[in-house]
Image 1 (cartoon, rainbow, N blue to C red):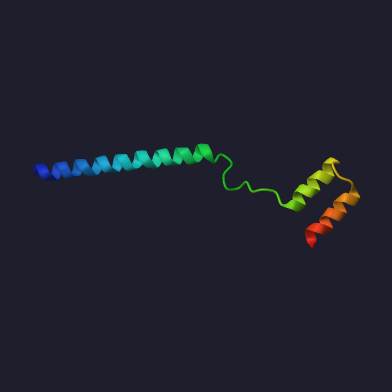
Image 2: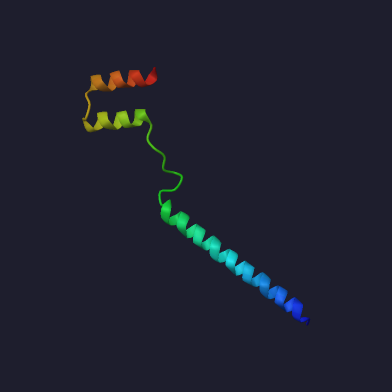
Length: 72
């Protein structure tokens, strides 16, 4: 076995390990910072309006009026 072949293989293994470590760190940071994921999206204005009406924050008249404003 030639010495240069051994050193080249060692260098490739070192690059592979460093790549795996960097990818692992990136994946960990993404997982920690984005625990909600892509599935969570903000509620639409109409959905918020429905929730407010259902919880009693606004009356039926206010709900209808604001719903009309949203549809315009």
